[in-house]
Image 1 (cartoon, rainbow, N blue to C red):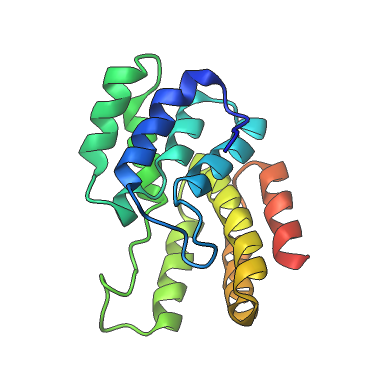
Image 2: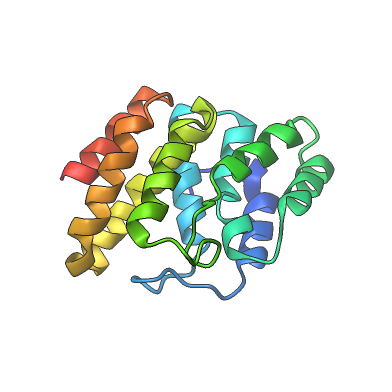
Length: 181
């Protein structure tokens, strides 16, 4: 897969690919790593900061792999000395779902979604900008590969976008366009 990202991020992409291993996307069955690379490419167009691109590349690591915030912090410190490893790690943690089914088995989907939406309304504008790219790419995939699930999924993302409005305005606009298309 070609990426619009500068070669400077090759090491981060390769590490993220390694950490995600053989994971595939739920409905498209593409290698999972294609999702963070796509999100990072979207983010890079509007928030070209090294920390934003790194956080976008690693945004699903804590949620979906055995690697944690300390691994991300160490990686950034070692390989991207001009980037702020605290900002990258904190942003990834802001983007990590705290209300997944496995973490909250006593809550139904609607309650988990309500709590996660409230939490996302409070994350940093920096993290919200990355979340817009995540939402846009996921909505495109769901619409294409899981049309029967799309109406529920898109409705949930609309609720999130209504309250998560502090990030980059063009990324937010793009997310809204994808959700409404």
